[in-house]
Length: 95
Image (cartoon, rainbow, N blue to C red; front, top):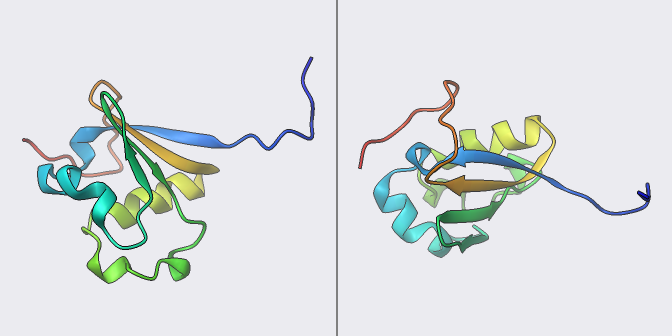
């Protein structure tokens, strides 16, 4: 039985190939980036608006389009996983 009052959030499931290797190594260390390393990748919070991203100038350039894609599709988080699909809307990086 489901309850309509539960605070449920969605996540965008993306390949780690959408991040540069250096970005992956430092993902949780960028200012205002909330990311947690998992066994196979990272779980990162996607802020609600790019205007709220205080440190966005210091962020790697590939993060903002990823966050925008997540939020445009109703996702509060991005799960980067080595086995997740690569999508055509975002660049990929070989490493």
